[in-house]
Amino acid sequence: MELKMITIENPDELNFILGHSHFIKTVEDIHEAIICTVPRAQFGIAFCEASGDCLIRYGGTDDALIELAKKNALALSAGHTFILFMKDMFPINILNTLKNVPEIARIHCATANPVQVILAKTDQGRGILGVIDGYASKGIETEEDIKKRKGFLRMIGYKL
Image 1 (cartoon, rainbow, N blue to C red):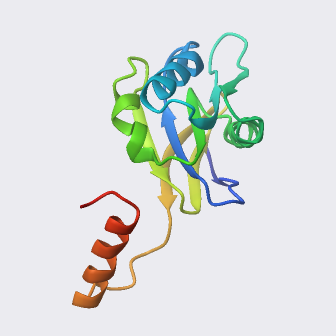
Image 2 (cartoon, rainbow, N blue to C red):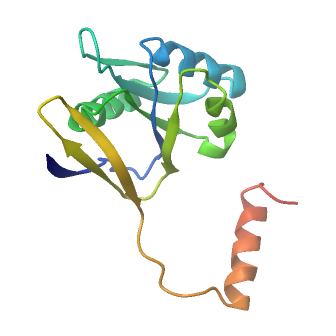
């Protein structure tokens, strides 16, 4: 077994979701789930098929996001992994919806942070062992940091 580290390419620091599924209809079901939750959503999804033809399946509503998803999925080429890039929306808008898509088995991360994916490679294929999402903690927030956090959440409309 060989361990590999793949850095998710995300030059515009877009929000994305990396997960694991189990069926060829993943792309269509995720597409429908997003559109029903966030009309006019801008996204691109790619899915690593791990049986049959073993192709990168893809879809979405934004060509650039679709290309970014395809590029990252091919770099991962791990199991039934999917990666979903989004614009003008946040993972919080669709995360619970995605968790209810029957073939989704796991969400590895939902973030705009830099992400490194730790893979195991064997003679059979590749699988995700885990992710490194962002950076190590630098300390504990102060009272001023709490005010800043609460102000930010209100500024972007997630708290009253």
